[in-house]
Length: 254
Image 1: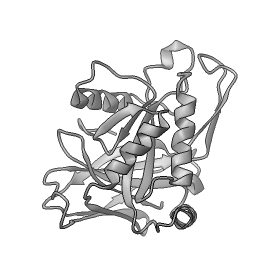
Image 2: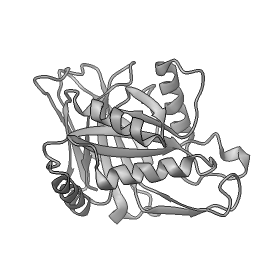
Image 3: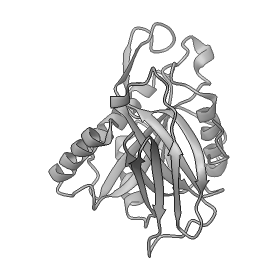
Image 4: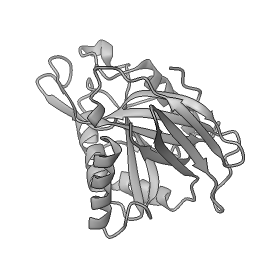
């Protein structure tokens, strides 16, 4: 899979859980604004487990009023030579993080790093700052992104919003994520620890471009047989070029 520069569970179970969480927080998921939270992490990094746990908690508890947190856990590969090769890592996510570093004018990359809606970056384990960034992102107008089943394929649809930018030329990306993953680490900085992960990105592709705030396409998705279908979800989002700002996101089933 080739990413451009910028470049939870099946829907029934996952959305039922999200709906319950939204009800518990006093706001239904339908009225919450989706906010994409990307975490660049590695099993070889001793500072990463707290950030992994925070991402899982945000996805489970949905603590930010008006925001529907959509998590993506992207495991980078540049820690692999330091004793432990992360089984979920990919060079593509390292490259994606480097693209963000260029956009943010950072001197380099680090883990754990959280990126909220492609617009704000911060240390991924900083709960206070992360929740503040999510709250701010939820106040931004968004394109509506829908991910639905279409037979054996997924249909991704982007709908315009009166208050949101049209996203002319923005990329539409589709990520397949898997939750409920665990590793027993035997080497490196986390040697001896059993690590848990949520919303690990298994694949991510650019599937099209928005024209005047509109996009619709049916996409055949090939799944690896080692992935547990009951723990998979699909996340689609619209990302501006070259700023990297996420203009809308949506969650769907496989």
